[in-house]
Image (cartoon, rainbow, N blue to C red; front, top):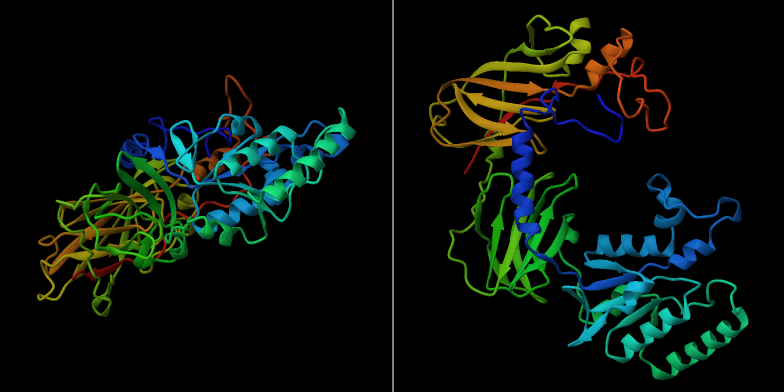
Length: 466
């Protein structure tokens, strides 16, 4: 909230400065693998740029491909509908333009584009297409590449130059394509892909988003559960593998997945809570690492931490409020004037008892709804920083005792501080290169904004792990 809306600041004054190493470590763990591998997508989807231009209102020429109005030219078009359907169905694809089609080569019934190979080309329902593009698609089809048109072949050519002559050539070309029988025209794209031996990835059926890549003889999946529901069960992957390694880029933990031969590849057992991500490495050889183990929370013994919480501000602005004791967890912005626009760090502390039979066991600590980060200490020992959903930390064996103290150092956003500055008329929006504006490029003023919820907003839960 402190900068021009399209900018950010991870300097020492940022509220996220102390947590930045954790974010950087996660990014580095992911990118070390993703940047040292190549795309592994099955499909090329043609982008019908000439249809976009043909739909342009003459009063607004030329068509500007702005990110703020993508639905006008992209997402609601047949192309946009197709790629959304492919994505939600679990297909892997890239995009291809008229010019890039000319650069494709064919080898072993695949089209090659740079270091990537593809097994089919899809053309969304489009009305206009250049002659040379249609000729190129026909040529690729004759070489054995599945070229699938949605609904129908294009009905016209773009532009006005030698229009009648080009329309005659288009009709002749379409007639020749029909006689050759190499081009497919269908309203059932998924069925056509299946007939071509291209299967969707089962990760999507479980609500898991993914990227598929290749590294040598290994196939990699970066899988992230961006849904609100947990994923748990056997998931079919489209590639055959002797072993599948699971890697957690958040913790660095790894292990060999439970795997079995699948109908079209390999099935693995996978659990992902909302917000969690894993990298799956499918190998043609057996794994030599330990099996990946899942801890099973014993929900019958879950403990909602009782008693009072002491909130002690330790760092922040505009001033440190007085410590406050509360019975139920809720946003600290409701604790009074000094708390309403406070931006900084607050230590939540409490104590609790465990049955003697549970002392020393491993537990799962669920912090609930954290705004925005929480660093946990139990009995003076650092358990870790929770900075993203699902805001859960594993407590190793030997940490918890019969009598315990819990401290959670919570840090909120800077936005509440910005509200306070604007309410007081304090000038803070002086920039060398641009005046500070909102997303509508109007003068920015946060004085009337509602403070962002801050702190721990839901009960903290302890659950024994089996």
